[in-house]
Image 1 (cartoon, rainbow, N blue to C red):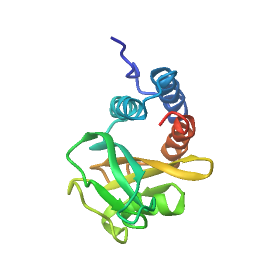
Image 2: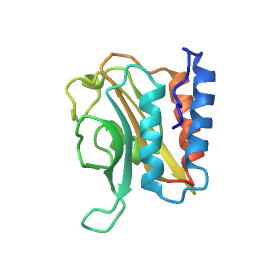
Image 3: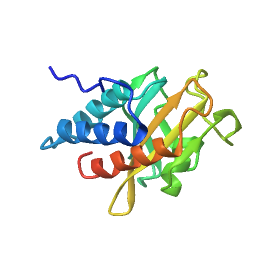
Length: 166
């Protein structure tokens, strides 16, 4: 069994280089998107301190057949909302805009969806393939302002690497 957890606290840039390298090693050659998302969700949980949720929402088809909602994917944490319409909450906003959402105080975010009342801050990064959002990586923390621009940059690098593996 491999231990992918970093041995010591690292500066953010180095931590995310190691995280992306570990995710690359775990997903290389594996064609199953769900397996890859599951392993990366567990990896995020191991690598990043002070989280209460880490995982994926995938772009799904609503009843009208359009890809205009997110569907819960593999994650680590408490049970979560299953479907999120584009434009709703932090995840839906990231999916609709295609832009990273770094939220210091989720209670101040218009339309925030409180799946876990303990969450205080959130980072959501879209995963893009051919310029279209195919999923989002969602990280929640029980601490206000837990996430920084360095975290956003690191998770964006992870999302770019995963774009053809999920």
